[in-house]
Image (cartoon, rainbow, N blue to C red; front, side):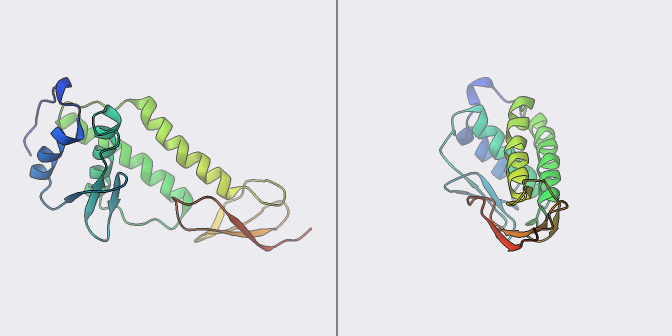
Length: 167
């Protein structure tokens, strides 16, 4: 892989994309509604939203990191948070090759969305105590023994369906 020197005047997805396509020929890049990595299709989707900003460039590098780490779908909420953290670390390494530095505050803001999402899913609908996921989408409260199921989708609203409620 050739190291490129990133010019501040080139801080756009449109300018970075052809370089990434050349350096990562096994990854297909297609326009989409959001920035996302599809492990099943081997495709990175990118959007024109934030395409002319550092955030767009950082999001694209983040998705390339998912691809280079060969990330698959994750069934455990806590593992997903760890996966996202390692992805940002890899995105920073990839960015260095192009002279791009990803702002740590941005990374923490992104990770905070996952932390908040995980906290909301893990909070008991009955007593609000935070518990650990038992299996794919299933939680059981340490305190009141209520069990609840959550959606597997990371993009939908958090809904908790109570399965067992012991008062």
